Image 1 (cartoon, rainbow, N blue to C red):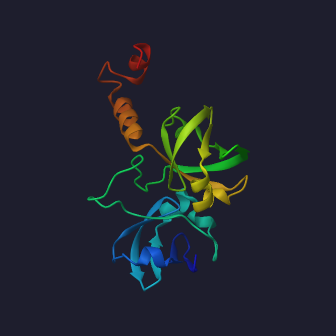
Image 2: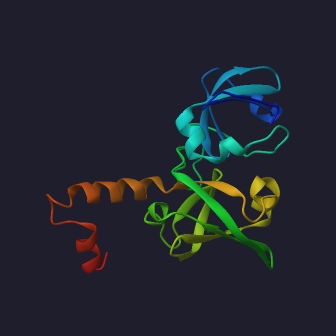
Length: 201
């Protein structure tokens, strides 16, 4: 993080990343810790983004400090290979790291989440933590656990985050659409979430 300009409820961030700026244009979408932001200015090695009040309120962007490392990801090219799950950069909320522990070549991370975020999580389903696409391998009420391979641990900020640090959570996009559709149709259709559960889905 190169510079931070804070308004009453908004922010302007300037970030340094020669790798990102080698192929950047005004108006490009860049995910910063999993938050989709728009490039408003750039030079050969830095770029600037604006953060609206709603984004400041709903994410961990508000806790960023000058000099802090962040995860950066450019938008997926339509002519590239698609790997992983759909990550839109539209953060649903935040969670808090409860515990990190090493198990052989993996690092397990337990994260506390709200009840609202929990309803979109499934065992072996996908979740984005600070923009990193991961698999949920353990799920408890208001808590999920993900496992980091060495590459993810070493190349992202999840490797250096500590217990009690706040992380951005983006639930699986397809799951959100399905649940929202079923909840809206409950009064008009027999195909509700409860109906599907009772019939083995």
